Length: 263
Image 1 (spheres, rainbow, N blue to C red):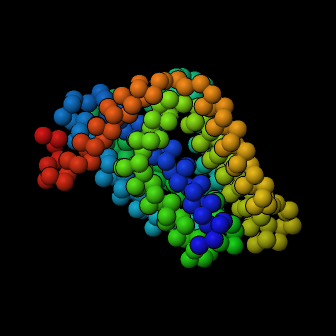
Image 2: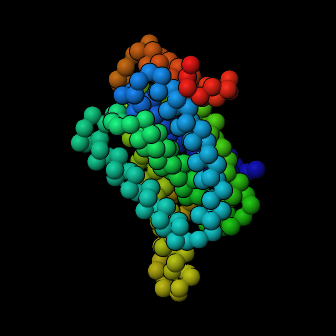
């Protein structure tokens, strides 16, 4: 365990926290059109589905690390997420939309959302690794740690990040800008690897110092701007988060008592 690994894990923890809070908010909002009893049942399926999908993502991490074309896809996917986030934000109020349709339509749609969040987590972990760490056990376990942190944060620690996002919604934008910077790094490294593999002579490289300086600048300046004025008071944020956590906690704890219908 060296300083670089600690920094990578700390960065993953912050990104996982913001993404997990986003995930929890999406789940709580999108099930609201369902009857009260079905809301808990849907969230139960979705919470367990999130765990299964996150574990599946961790198992696929070794393939993403090994093959350059999967990393190329990952860079493109992360870039797409960032563009889609800001396009959507510019077109409406930026809030997740309630799902229409049957119970199973809501469950399936939300699990697809969870799949996207799981992929985000794994790809961010891969992108933060130095190229020489990608094919090592250390690199693999860093990515696994990111996936595990996502599982823990979405269940237990997202309250803190939910409150932050409720008071300072622009922090969500900062997280996506960081993901865009990570996508750029992953894309440049993929071009560099392809050039070396096929002897193309392309000169593509992002020094670690520039990457981490960019991360620090985006995080520092972005956080300063995003937190200059709160959109909600602390009391209002506590009330909003308590309502969301109550819904998610009931759903997550429901299977533990042998019932799955929220009764």
